[in-house]
Length: 486
Image (cartoon, rainbow, N blue to C red):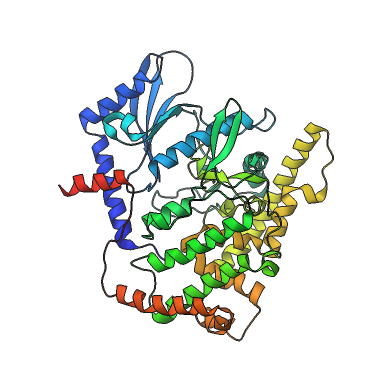
């Protein structure tokens, strides 16, 4: 389902206007003074560092000989719909990872020195994190992607990279994935530090999809999940419900016809059935009660920093991190090709063919990580204990696609009809006509589901006649919208 382009335009307007505000001389100076006051060292230089997809950052370096510096990181209004929650979760997970990763399996994250709310920030710019700067040469993505890519182009794995070099780089990434898989909790959600070396799951799992369905899917914030989950199936059902709520509430670009609307509802109801039906659920969900590993929605090569030798020196952008069903971790990473399947220019099946050849290399790298880790512990590693084996099973069984569809609202429809439906509900005469396959599945819906579908078909068709902004952002974004319009 495409993004709501009216909401997307408003989001971009707010982001661009706010970034201009940062370079107002008085505000820029206030940011520098604020950062200097929070760093007990003589500063040497202060500058704007970068604007990423979700944050703007400033860098202060110091006059002494110690390397590094301090970074002030601010979430972008109009982009982050939950900035205070985002900052709290990101600062907490970085502190947790720093404490819990061992010396033999470290994940180098920035050291957090302070984080705070909007009213504590310079010029009330927004909630913030002050963290250490990790000196680096480039990102892992720079080493993997096709040389000469322009900033606006979609990422693409370099087709000329050698198998040997690819395995070396994948090995660096596999080390992080494996280390992260060893951190877990007994519930699904976001962490809170409750004492020295004491942590608990205390908040809902704030995912990147939750942010995006509010920002670009115009879902009211009140419709998002708010719970902490003790069982994986409960969380998967919440994600399935989120897909349904997203479709019912997105104002623009949600459907293009009555049949398209019905097809999308059928897919979402049947996906929910995969969770609710015990017989179907047992085919893909094996770890109902955890433990639940730490999961980062935004972990990818672009957020992995490397030195001149290509060795990992830092991992950044942890805002959408939480403990999640182990099946998320058991699915191999989508980012082996750098590009997501829904954006692959040659189509989904071509993406799968390219992905599978790279997956074999990544799994070899993961096996080496596992061997090193268990040799260090002097333990014997059984085949069914290997993360690499579970990743291979996830891909070969198709569980990979259930995890991907569950987490990616805007990519859901193509993934469901191409990769999930036939596995659970059998083939039919419409297999080669995905646009009409839903008609052969109507008998699987409950009566109340058919009623909901019929109700919303009429409503969505009426909505298609006009294009309005239906947005429910955070209060800071609303305040800034009011300033723009004043």
